[in-house]
Image (tube, rainbow, N blue to C red; front, side):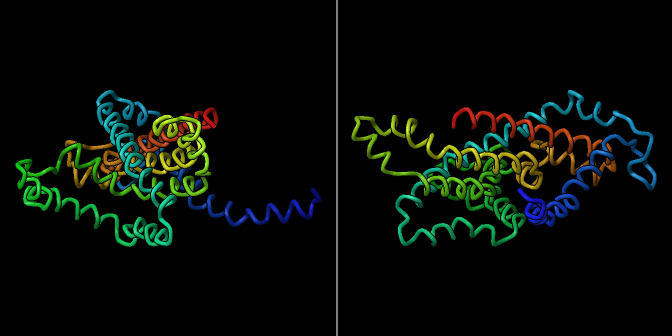
Length: 280
């Protein structure tokens, strides 16, 4: 490649590089710097000398239940989004026909309103006097006090919020999938279950992987849904980080927790990426 072509090719990446440097790398570097600082109860919230005390506090076994709860919520949300999103994506790609655009727009409609407003709506629905409890009361399955402040409420809210992130990548993979392979599998004597696991799932695995990552990462860092639907008893790592920055005025500890959560997400991405390469 000539020098002029190399400069043109890299020049196209310059705006993106500047954007990432200002809005991603610089804030991340600032968070890392705060994580090694010392807490100050005065005007400054993070000062020298640098220390690893914040990381030692963040790794305290007392935070382990919250850490595990965060992972449980994230993986449960990802699993539910996959179970609900795959049939929907397959139906739109396979049987959507002329209504395919309408169905895709219907999937995107929740993005047209505020995420916070939608979670508050779920809070009203799951309350003791909410619509969900009233409908379940008709068949005798209502619950005193409603379904708020429970693990199920948190997972339900997260699943509702991040389901479109699963459906869209799955739809792209299902739409590109050669459906003649399914018919060929049936002709060769394979049943529905065998065809799904041997033909369909490997064929759309890129969409499954992309959708799972798009759901898992934000679900692990979400703090609005656990706080509104779960309360203090269902706190997650994200809500604890928010408490340290706002109410606790402990920026070093909040930054250290944020860095640890980021490292966890990166580790999950690397492991899933390697597994995806092995499968593909």
